[in-house]
Image (cartoon, rainbow, N blue to C red):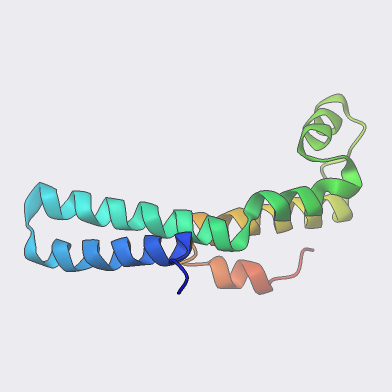
Length: 114
């Protein structure tokens, strides 16, 4: 018999907090909801690895630091379609973790870059 994974433990605590929240009121209910949302973000981050997605998207440009420096010193153009696609991909990877229920998230994922 194996032990539960970190993600399974996080989900178990989230479910508990959801049940507890229903029985709580006021400030305690609010804090239970905040804690549950924080655990959901942690679980999505563990599953989706946005840091790796960002690194992969920006690797052709030398990574995050190189993109920042290149934009600052003018060696990279903010209008470069390839750079815009890479930055967009990195941002969407982060948004998928931070707030996947963002009202326009699905539209942003599907809309091609001009």
